[in-house]
Amino acid sequence: MKRIVIVGAGFSGSVVARELAAAGLKVLVIDERDHLAGNCHSERCASTGIMVHKYGPHIFHTDNERVWNYVNAFTRMMPYTNRVRAVSGGQVYSLPINLHTINQVFGTAMSPSEARQKIDEVSRRDIADPQTFEEQALRFVGDKIYRMFFYGYTMKQWGVEPRELPGSILKRLPLRFDYNDNYFNNKFQGMPENGYTEIVAGILAHENIEVRLGCRYEDLTETFEHVVYTGPLDRYFNHSAGRLGYRTLDFERIDADGDFQGTAVMNYCDREVPFTRISEHKYFAPWEMHKFDKTVAFREFSRLCGAGDIPYYPIRLINDRVLLERYVAMAEQERGVTFVGRLATYAYLDMDVTIARAFETVEALLPQLQAGAKPPVFVHRPL
Image (tube, rainbow, N blue to C red; front, side, top):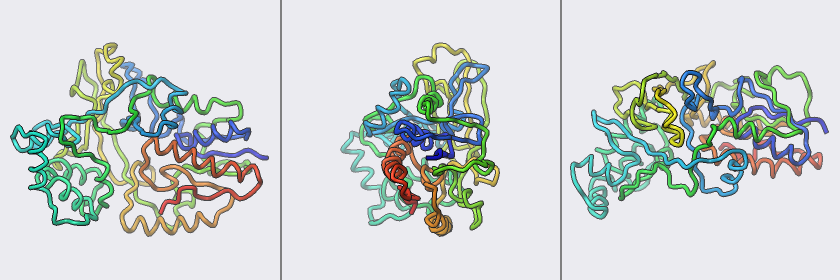
């Protein structure tokens, strides 16, 4: 059997590569960037020594024990609780929306039951089946909280009115009637002691895997038994039907002595503030904060992704879904390729879901490869 080529050295490609290699297949992993781990890449800042998440904060959280055990085999996951603060109207609030936030917003000292009653009073229960982000938010928390925390932030993050976005985006955000300000509810949560790139490097450290960085798929001249493609689906087809819509991010670095904002993540909810949030990266590694007398933070700006930009978040509005259907139909006519991961399936995926889907892809792919049969084009169909 000829080698398998994996296009992309993020979590999707790396986990698929490792599992195929462990089954005895020879694998080449390529990535056009000069580093491993894709958008999860982390590295030590040369001037401060702080571990920086180069493409924005990544907090690992999951209920999937298999995934948790898998990443722990390649790193030491350190305890970390994601607590987010938000600036709205010149005041700092606690996120996600919890009893503290509710009492701050309404200037009260309500009990959990009183807060539930208050939210019932202000929420739009007449919206029986919310379809849009705005409808979901209004039914969820009412107009005041929606305007304070979600409207402006969402406009900046997505570049469209919230009424144009699907309600499913907001369903990921919790509402609590206690003082629990842990952003996630998952069983497992943590940060890798030495960053995410160490995990990916460990996953790819196998005798059956060759890694080439700074290598584009379009420039390969070798032939392969099969291609596992984790890049953008529309790019695979040279954008022949048009470009799928993504948002991308720009980062403005802040260097300071001591502390800058006193927390890892501060959201800026007002529409008039041009950036969405500031992340101070030494707070993502509280076990080593005592080492640093300087700090580094980044303002984060969201905008429409252009031809030369890094795609972050699929927009998936109506026109994008129509275009996606065309690309899926084109992909399903292909032979010798399997599309996997967030870019290749045009989906927003947390890291744990990415790894779980990589496992499932291998489970579907490997028997077909070993039998000389046609592997699936999609294990997780984008539509």
